[in-house]
Amino acid sequence: MPARLGGRWRRLFAGILDIIIVSLISSPFTYRTYGTILDIESGVFVRIPIQHTLLAALVGFLYYWLLTAFWNGQTLGKKLLHLRVTDVSGQRVGVGQAALREAASWVMYATCCLGWIDLAFILFNQRKQALHDIVAKTLVVDT
Image 1 (cartoon, rainbow, N blue to C red):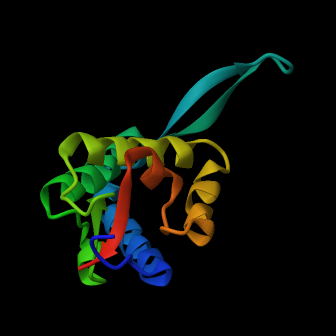
Image 2: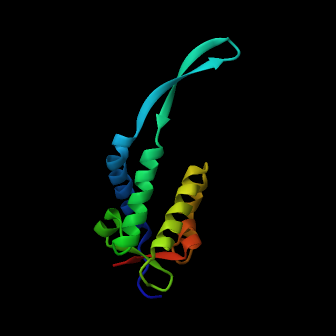
Image 3: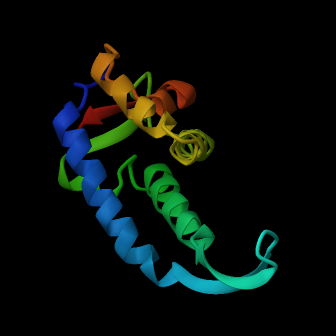
């Protein structure tokens, strides 16, 4: 193993910091509008709120992907807590590998409870890998 694996708690708190940062950055891209649809049962047009979050999700994906790929495997949260993402041999993560890691993560978070299962793997996996780490063949290590 090239470096000491990052601690589970530090990884959790780095993730919380990153979520806060992404929320602050993406909040201008999250907005609500209203659409009008016909309620078939009552025959009346009703207004429904529509939450627009696609741009916010794109900002989040780009934050994690680009920082992991081009900033020594670190997001701001990981940098503050002295963690970084490497490939399984301890080398720097490539652009494609970072994209695969984030795409796997986002797909699992967007699919019901798979985001929780993804994170729970950290607790039981000997190398402290979440499912998205296993898919992309990455590790989170100390810096």
